[in-house]
Image (cartoon, rainbow, N blue to C red; front, side):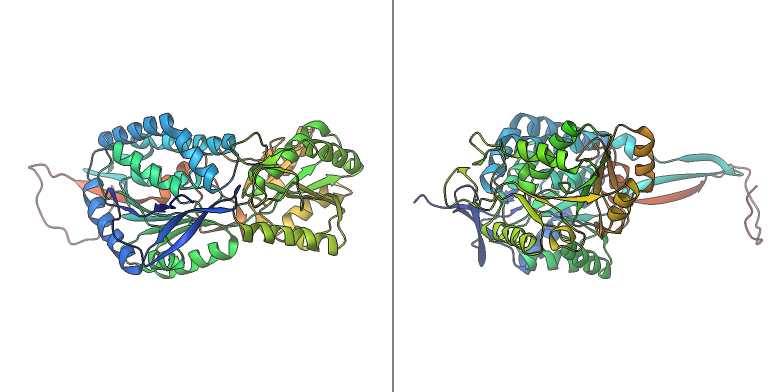
Length: 499
């Protein structure tokens, strides 16, 4: 057996060269084998990273917008030319198929390109002569050290929702990636160094709860950005804000797709399969609950099942449509939801628990799974499964379907499929969900809009990237200015008045 690769911290422009007190296993999910060991940070190491980032930020914040933009453009060019390398690391450690991994990097690159416009995004306002000889203007300034705690399902794209804007705005960054697939962010750190970013502005600290808790507590960390499950998002938000930090914590999802009787059923079936089983359903924007307004359910389910029969599950480096789940533990958890659905009385139309796969038998496999006759009381509807399980619920009307969606605890993304413009407009106005697709199953906004849900899908007031992202990573300041002319003089103890 070949020697396992070591994945370690990247601090102050170089890899950490001291031995780790504890490590974690990194698997290739398609092989079911350990391929690396990732170092876990101690409290002391996190303290060191914060100190490095603090010192680097003091210089970086004073660099000109022109200099920052040059670095961002250089980073964008390196990322674009070498994104296939990142995609291969993602496939090796996460399991998603190579084309999906490459698409992830490309979507993250869009935020880098958005951040390249930081001179325009940081423009304030100016009011000349607000009062006699007094001007008032606003500016936006960086926060300081910004921590990012990112999930396993998008090891490149999700961090790129945050760090390009944070860095462009003059902050320094510490990223704590998922310990399940940590290599991609290390390569990205190398890209930043090659682009000319000063050492210490972009740092990677690997670890577990010890590292997370220290980032939440450390007085030198100004903000926390997090994406993950709702229980952890709530924990991050409560503990981060308790320690005086600005926090954006994006949580879980149960995304509904409402299909009206007038919809194009072939388009809807394609969308349900693509959005339900892409990346093995390990997406916070995956469609996991299809709400069919009768009388179309039977026809729609038949079309979905037909398309599912042609899906190939296997190694992401081979000819496959869907890869494995990220770990054996997660695969078993998702399979337990399938078991629960059967016990609770849902109709199992397609069973993915024993799939035929193009890959090693030891891989963490679970095939696409389809349930019909699901009711709101069932656990497969109530919980975020985060796997390739699509549940179909039948309703009698648009109003019943809308009420079903609005009652759910999650409000991340949703979609409606219809050819009725009035119904679509009514839906976008009435649905209590943060991101809405109209005949689009995964409504992930482009980089210049902001990403984020409602209800238990978001803790904090600010969404990711777009204008809200710029505001999150900066603080507003208003300056009132008067430059005196030679004729000024005299004392007036009265209350100042606007004139």
